Length: 437
Ligand code: AMP
Image (tube, rainbow, N blue to C red; front, side, top):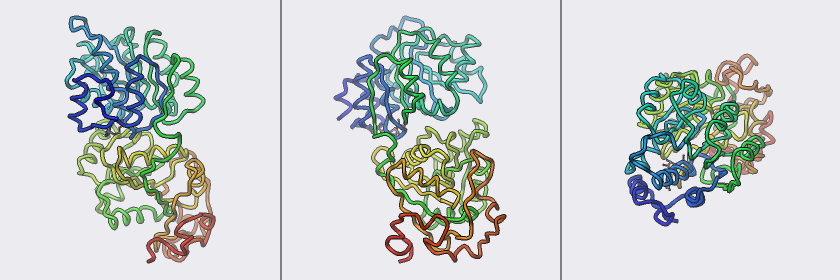
């Protein structure tokens, strides 16, 4: 369906055209008419589905319909997001899609000085995009008045709950007027999300952009079984040999993100790390450098990468598998956006085979295993439990402490050992590795 058939105003159609879009994505086709109709919406949609425009366009139109230029400005729309990056991105969309409309907006998040945000709010805004914590700081300091909010959007609600924002969200939901329109977007629907929706949404229409918990179909997925202490080497090899120009690489911990970025950078592959311990300035710069192609590899933790929107991102690599299978889906969702092809690889050491199995169970599919020549796993290494969110670096010398040496790494053949034998690999089934012939 084309945007022009969705009942949007001329100003909004013009901004959509400026962005170069004609055809609305499935979530946009479903959500836009319902939101314009004033309905509460509970939408299952992850990043990459076009959800941001799916709520931004109709809410701008609703504001437009009742706009009175003589009235003092006050926040009429509030969008809550889990991270600063996502807040900045949603705000960018609000500005892009609203460029031919008279509305003013502000983005509010922590980690930066509160005063410029106050200045902006004092001048009067119609739309506020915020992370929950800093928004509540403003409420407490009376620099924002939420008493006339008409539309509330909870974006990536599941992630907000994962990040422990539930109390803040409840507080905010109790501050904004009861008489309002509420839109809740979430990649997954846990019991908590459903409880929240039942409590705060009025007779919501439920939408599902993609069947729940299925990986983006256009992403090709490969798992490389490899020993922990050879991951960096193999990743560098893949980047160079397959000539990846832009890759988002995930680690489980901030420590491994830093360490990996440093090692790649030293080996001549420009890289930077992005995670919660970095200052907002450093995160913004890393993201901008990556988007501009100045830096080839961005190494990120799950939370830092959440919501990052990079057009045409061709490669996603899981340097370490996530502890939570759903996070794998979020990670690979960074590639293959809006009709493009994507490539996701995972470096899987023996400790992570169980995580891989859990992911496959969630996806209801086997991920192709490819044994990279010379990097086959050493069958003498036994799996060790992965400490939850622990500071252990999987790229460190951990493997060596268990007597593993690089010299014998090439010795093990596919299927030789610890767990690998269980993998229903296409590579195995065809009797060798993908690179053998
Ligand atoms: P989102 O899921 O909102 O993060 O959007 C994912 C990406 O798709 C962003 O880069 C959007 O700019 C882009 N996008 C949104 N709507 C469309 C559309 N109708 N056609 C093509 N790309 C779109």
